[in-house]
Length: 446
Image (cartoon, rainbow, N blue to C red; front, side):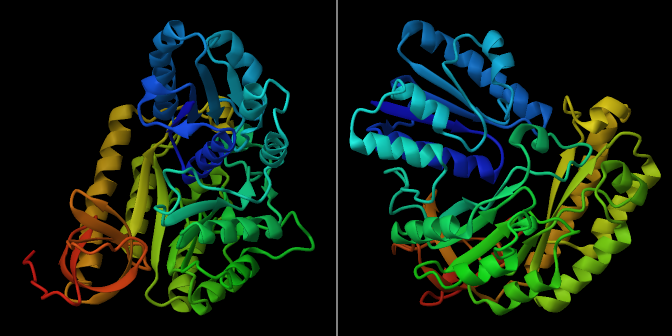
């Protein structure tokens, strides 16, 4: 028996798909990359933007002929398209789908495949564990021993409710995982060869706020820093309102906490930020970036930007442009506003910025950010940096620096899972090339 998982969207969906694959392999299934060979197909979906939802519907439509050809094929629709309460509405629209699973919950699929009955004590334990979202995660066979960097959810859902965001409606209210479950999962991943973990949450720096007797995110980092086998720890995504000095100090002090911070601003104009219900001003964000750079020297900072939010004027957009120009951040994830059904902005604010204008603003930010990144990365030329290598891509080893810069190295050695100092020989806005220190470096002119 074979399974195939198609994953779209955020890192949380990637982590959810790993958990589904683990559950299926406990039941005796093996992974296949050929969808036509699969007995179970899981579509793990994202609906943060309309394009992602359209892509999911397109993929679903392509599966209908497979279901007609093989009525025993099990199709499982999972993730934000289903949401925490959307299964009944979708059943009438998608009659060829067998199972509808909310985000982060393999339970409905496991129950369907076992017909609500257990075939052995092992199956009983497997079903109980995954229905309860318990702490053990055995990686799928095709990732075991080869996966170097893994994602570990620590906060599910979100209660912040920004006016444009569909996540609270699809993933439910904010809930932190118990620290014991998280640490047990991290230890399990370390035992399977994982060297780097990224702690995930829609607002990850709110971890523990709903658990009165547990640690916050800074405390969790200090606990995980003691886990043998894990060499690097990252976390995302943070919110400016909750990124405190204790978290900055933890990153600065802990040897395994990487100096890369993801803290979105979304817009650089105060009126737009207020309409988004973000809870801070442009000046607040400037002060936060200044404090992070003071507490964590040499760190890299990533942000998210939405252009074309309802009623965003040219002057307001230029405030965002100025913000990126002033702060010179290492990464800017750019998106054009897309109204999502059920959100406050879709109900109360007209989508009155044209698609052409959204694209123009997107391109302006993209071009500026590319220039900024090229200048930031050029400072690495000729420098020695430590890289954790993950895999070989098109004949070159791919890895990342502590500040999350992408580096490629040509080597016949097996570098997977190794942290090695390299000499940077070429830099561009999106990646760098380097040689191992044992090789003769050759500087490439820009």
